[in-house]
Image (cartoon, rainbow over all chains, first blue to last red; front, top):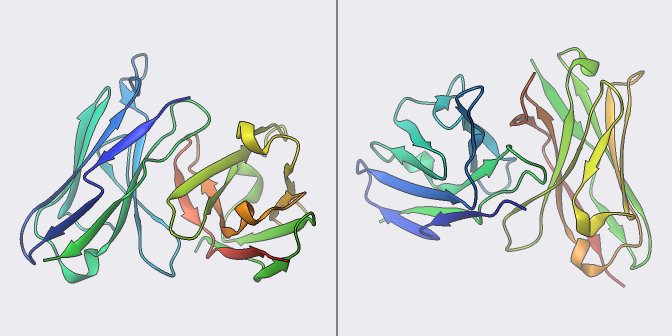
Length: 113
Length: 119
């Protein structure tokens, strides 16, 4: 099974500053015939369901603020929040959907410093 | 708009079964597949499996094989998760999630159902 590992486990960033979360896959998520990476990012706030932020590793879901961006290919991926807002406090998960079981990373807890 | 509304919280004894429903609206039900995801207390998200609406095929995580069944009812646009032989390790919030059209990421989620297994 594919294993997804996020770093760091938790992160404290000042309001207005940049936050960066990393996600590493145990195998490449690049499906070469499609030239797409089968990776998504979700935001999960307490008491709410997870929310899709990014799919195909770098495509922002409709309605997601443009301060969220994502990049990477193969086995290494990054989610960046360019200017942290108070409402961005959450746990962030990457998930691969390349091979079932479609595993999640362990999550990164993002807090305000 | 797309809505996935799950059934209410459940309390079950060890060894019992639970069936969680996920009623959908706002889109053509049988054009999309579903996954179920759970979050145990203090833990991360765990993907449990998925069901195709095209052919009813399912794929479950290995450690739930034999205890889990995912089904759908197109007449009511509802997806179901049944989990049998419950243990305390199954205590979690269970989420249904719709797979994006033609892809396997999860673009819409239910609000979650807390299942508590306790004697």
